[in-house]
Image 1: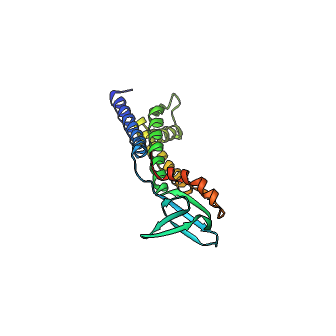
Image 2: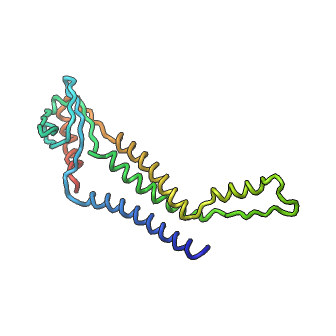
Image 3: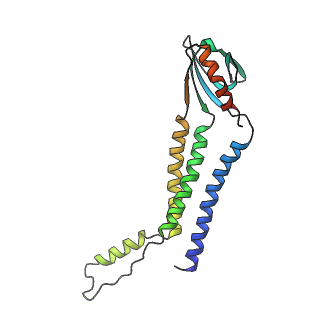
Length: 199
């Protein structure tokens, strides 16, 4: 292994670590800061109406949504069910998936090393049909260095991770069945408040 190849491996490994640390730190920072989380709620009322908006507040007796600067108040007794999910959860999932996938691809590419490069050696009987020469040429055309594998692996697994993260983020939501019962809603209230505010 030559010195340039070693330097390239170190560079890509540092890049992989940097990507992973950046995304993990972004998640940690957002979890430690005290700020209001934004949830999107889809509500079904007892009279079968559907309402959608950001969850503005929850108290003992009602759910308050906000949509286009308008407040919608849904009393507990008129609340059949509702689902909640984080705003921009698909984008967040895509970013995390890309970061993890790219880091994994770079590390795997570097760990696999350089592909061997074949030399053309026709032997004592030569290569009258040129088949051996073709085989050597094809093998060498697909041979990649560890750095190239890291680049392609990082891009490939990064995109795959982004797609998977987007899907998971898009479908990640929680459903609550209230059925117009104030007691059920009251029992959920403290848990909902904890979700709304980061501690």
